[in-house]
Image 1 (cartoon, rainbow, N blue to C red):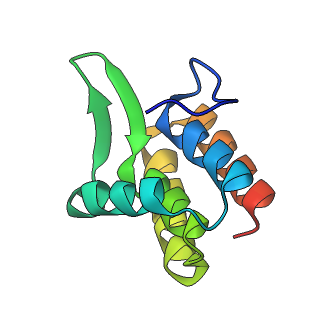
Image 2: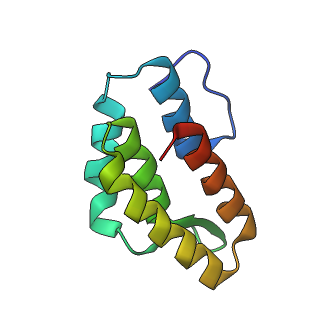
Length: 105
């Protein structure tokens, strides 16, 4: 799926942020993201054998907040930040905190 303004290299979470800003209320992408991610809540996201994406709950929280479900998104983001701290993922921590500040949850 291509959307004008999506920047290569940002990944799905960045794409969700852009879609939220450009298409608030659309919801199809976010609803699909919630459907796909919820079964993996509480786990670490990985790609292949060497790339760790960070806690799934952070991405799930972004999808939920774009659907207007901030009350569900907040605790998931908190859990993601806790897991990120336990794993020493300082860049992920900073990124998710920035997302929370920008999106207000």
